[in-house]
Length: 184
Image (cartoon, rainbow, N blue to C red; front, top):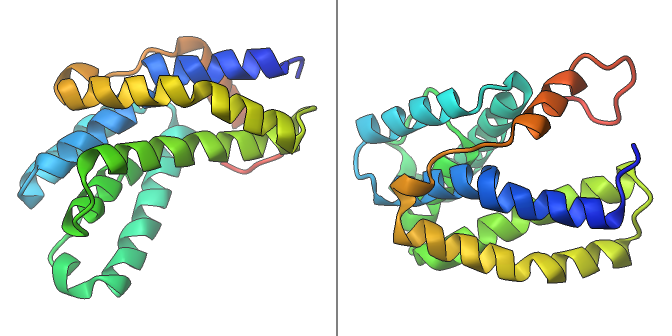
């Protein structure tokens, strides 16, 4: 694919700055504050509008649906009434985290860290990147994670957007490749 370790590091920094680091973290923070099912449904609808690439949107919905199902089994008392027709991962993460008593900053940091880790694990399988190099990148992006989380906490609504057209085009093209490493 021609991507280098430095390219990957820049890509992850860009995703934090203007991609999922804005959109998903803002959705999580907004979900954390919403008290009713209608508000959560509206938030999920708006998040679906921002996730225009079907593969990205469907992945978010599948992960969110799985998290919601598992959380209902584990925390049945506090989640039985929660029904979402579009259970986006970040929204469900925010609701479950709040109802579990996790502070917003910690929840945002955990979500961002997990998302970066997932991307780095995939990169070690798809490109010439060792686990040690992935760890180096993870350390280098920590200040970007912290800055993005602080920005989202300051103004979740202002952060609720994404602007990664090149990455979106590539993600859309991936669904039509003859040979793929991952199903979407």
